[in-house]
Image (cartoon, rainbow, N blue to C red; front, side, top):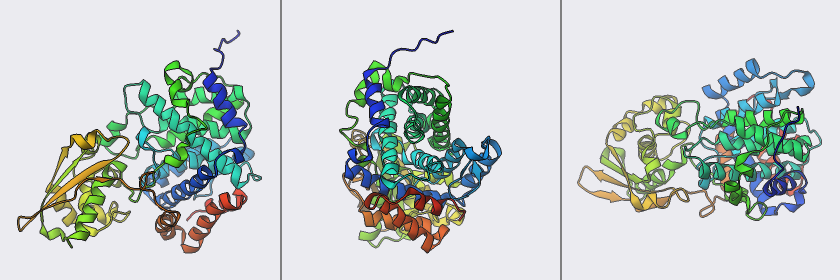
Length: 455
């Protein structure tokens, strides 16, 4: 039987040229430099998440369920070292990162890309000992560019708000096609397979009931890598409608002109991005008024509807804490910071934080709603025992293109997350190796050697 598949669309032809034949030097230096910092930032979260329960389970399950068929197909798991299939390694690391919500994101898609494409790069590079830094960053940029546009197309053409794994799978498949040397026909089938099997899970369901599922990124990475391997072997699945359907075409018009890699935001807190503006507002009120938590008798948070829909109760798990708006604001007002210590173990049982959560009310504010998803705006009011009401004014989440962090800021964040787990020396070496990928075109293997061993 002959399988009839529609001819490739002009959009696919442009994407194939962009993905498979574009030289690393044709990618703007600004995009490559940003990719190196996004890689560093994501690796910091991966290291910090390694000892967490979700990461341990994900790595153990990769060993149990997703082993390689032959030794030459096996690659090491990030920050673990045990060897599994390339898809298993991507699943393990992406699931690990996904469960510590401090990794990069992209406002227009209301989701995250680095969480899937960074593990994919690490897994794919294990079979490419000759891979140079510039080519590794080029593959990473392609992952960001394809995933972001696939996410925009999906959100614009279906009714549900799907998790990032649904569209990250396409970015991962494109990276794998480039680094494994697939031809255009194989790439087209890989994208179709990745889209078809991508986890179209409902994000707001996870927001309402936070668990280790998070943003579907572990499955998204696994599907994207599996899709490329399957297409390479002759498995068919083209076309991908988020790429080739007429109603999706507009989202690919600026491919190679607007570099979405440069538009990703970096998070200062390991908390859902929707809570960052009120956290910053709480930080500023605490600093400006020398505010003590004992003085507070009421907290009102005004933000956009999706933020107000975050987990409303007192969290019992780290997963719930990362999606809790009242808890994260209360933690900032109590401790002056929101980090891993505040969202795990004894931090979840802090009585002062619990008291403030009970004093918090949430309200959807129209002016903040109109600025979402391009911005993540909020304001808060804090009522004190002496009757004063402190108003924060409007805040937008930091770390995006309108208020970016410097290279020094991102390196400091990386060290704060990675060094407690990896040690100061190893963390510093990873930081140096990431930055050298762009400036010196250092071999990617230099970085990989630092990433595979367990903490």
